[in-house]
Amino acid sequence: MNIRHHLDDATLMGHAAGTLVPGMSLLVGCHLERCADCRERLAQAESVGGALLEEVPPVAMDSSNALAELFARIEAEPFEESRPTQPRMPGTPPEAAMPMLLAGQLDGRRFDELDWRTLAPGVRQVDLHLGGPGATRLLRFAPGVSVPHHSHRGNELTLVLRGSYNDEVGRFRAGDVADLDDQVAHQPLNDTDEDCICLIATDAPLRFSGLMGRLVQPFIGM
Amino acid sequence: MREEWTACLARMAESRDRALFAQLFEHFAPRIKSYLMRQGASPAQADELAQEAMLSVWRKAHLFNPAKANASTWMFTLARNLFIDRLRREKAPCYELPTELPDADDRDAGEGAVISDRMLACIRKLPEAQAQVLYMSYYDGRSHSEIAEVLGIPLGSVKSRLRLAFDKLKLMWGESS
Image (tube, rainbow over all chains, first blue to last red; front, side):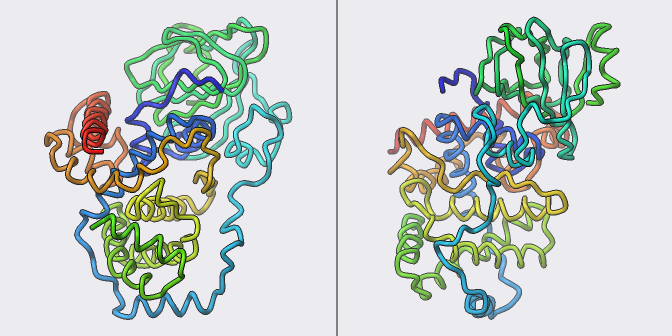
């Protein structure tokens, strides 16, 4: 996959530090599945955390027998090395465009099997209800259709899963991620002849501009 | 010194030697506890999660790849993931990456282990404003928006300070390796 638009270093640092909202964390994980460049930078961002772990002043464990208690647990709960630690990946994605992490979130359903809600002519969404401030949703827009012009109060991550779009920032194709902050306003336009499906995560409500946007905002609820 | 911990963890993974694990426990458990308390865990919860983290170290040691990360970085990610999972327990999708992602080009192999040994020295050389946002993010577990609010600066400034810090760290680390 030829990825041209990557995650911002600051976003990878937030992911490494564990401070992203759930939806952004999911989206970052989906992009990382396919992007060696961002995986390498994440490893660097995590090594910052490792270095800081060495620097933190140690706090004594409550029990002076903590180690012995742990060994007792290890004895009591035998554990096979070869056994998978946890079933984190619930199966293979039902279609190539779907990242593994997203497939787990959608219980193995295909994009066409989801409960798409119409927001505006040619624009549909599925809210993933992941909690936290902001929203996480799949957005699907038809050829030639554009998403209402909007800016953000916080950050907005968009990962293209299928198709492509164009906006003020550039052209985004499957695998690309748009990592935008509150300084960018944009209006993505589907520039191919197939539906464009994106995963979008925000950490604060969006700000729509223009009449269409203001009409749509109450329905989008983001 | 930190390189020794990496070697110690790798040897423990190989041999399952309890004396080696004991050394790792004595060094890392109190640091993981401290880190989790800074993240907002209560002392009792941090203590329990530090125990859990060390249990994971024992159980997942065979997955540790010293070519990709050093011991402290690996333990940091284990503790961080445990804490995030705990916070999201009620409707908890797991966002952890599969432990072994196919790494087509494998370009980071061999470098990981040395990275954060030099990283700490580099972090200490950062300008104060950049070090501050780094600490607030990694230690205090604050989101970038929260940091912006606490410091009374725009979100964009927080992110650009982090980016600058990251660029400097990568540069210093590139020079020294």
